[in-house]
Amino acid sequence: MNFDNLQNTDPVCFDLIQEETARQEVSLELIPSECTASLSVIEALGSPLTNKYSEWYARKRYYWWNEVIDKVELLAIDRAKKAFPGVAHVNVQPYSGSPANMAILSALCEKYDTILGLSLSQGGHLTHGHKVSATAKFFNAVQYWLTKEGYIDLEEVEALAIEHKPKVIIVGFTAYSREFPFEAFAKIAEKVGAYLVGDISHISGLVVSGVHTSPTPYCDVIMTTTHKTLKGPRWAMIMVTDKGLEKDEDLSSKIDKSVFPGLQWGPHNHQTLAIAVALWESLTPAFHEMNAQIVKNAKKLASELESKGFEIATGWTDNHLILASVWKGRGWYIQEALDIAWITLNKNTVPNEPCSPFNPSGIRLWTPIMTQRGMKEEQMVQVADMMYRVSQKVKQFEYKETKEERRAQLKEFREFIRNNEELKSIKKEVAELCSQFPIYS
Image 1 (cartoon, helix red, strand yellow):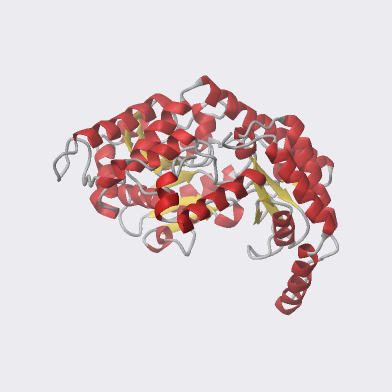
Image 2 (cartoon, rainbow, N blue to C red):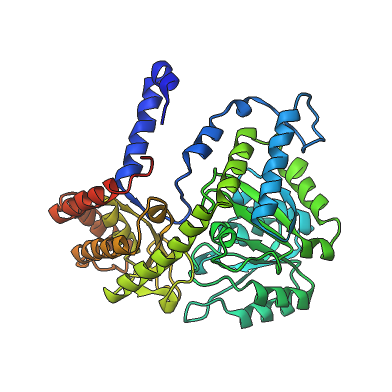
């Protein structure tokens, strides 16, 4: 990547870019929520479109000389409709997924109306009604849970919907490795007259590629971030489906007014351009093949981890994501030990979690970035082996019941992993593997 001007004018910031780029190249990024944007997307993000202020929507701007910006926004909308057949209206202005979800709820609900979403501890998202989120402060948030086996408890969803009569039901998850049951949720929503909102931030690339069921025949409104499996900028889109307009002919207008002026002001035009670029790339056969491989890699990695003693939630994965139980309250330890070995994932609660979200028993990981680099099933075997060896190295550190004991052990643990030669050796293996699959060759 060429940053000659920045190198000349601000070498400190130039060096920071080089440092972070180098880190990404030599490490395995398995944290769900990240992607490797293409060079074309990165170039779009650095374009002069960032200079222009464009309050309102295409062909309705408050400021002059937005003809080119209008073309960019309309292009992004058109490409979104091509990527998601059955979508009738698209808003490409939300700054990210969280404000986009808030905009949807503000459009569909009055203050204190009831919403129904999956609990954060069970794999939902903060903005699906968690108590610390504005979505629970402005609306009456009811939460559904998983079954003991780790599946969405559809019987509970239906019972809660009948009891509470929510205005909105949200189907969408951040730590759920099975097929999203859009059709089942649609039947429940229709039974109680609720809007069905699909949050497909994690699986949108899979949906475009046809390797996951599309929400468009079942949901009224769909939200997706664009920086996960879509490989785009850190941004979001709100889409109204044909089904949604049949339910409410004013739905598109409600969404648009809720985004602007309801929650935000001028759009970021360089981001809109980058969305258009990413969506164009998503329509190619190469993108579809890559997403199919993402799922194949996830299945292979899950199988290999399970064979080595990791407990995979629901015993399998249908998508890009794996949720694995390690040991009681020790997800944190595995996360930090893997960090030393340059394998990055996150600690996570698991179904029937015996501990708190601060000391969870599981880890959450995915395969998109590895696949985007060109890795396939053979490399998943290697990654599973390295993860297993790291986990065995720190197995001696058991969960402590009191905060004081955990604090003391954490200090001992961090000293141990900092100086462990085997972890350093695995780090070299990771760097060697990554060198064979550069992100930006």
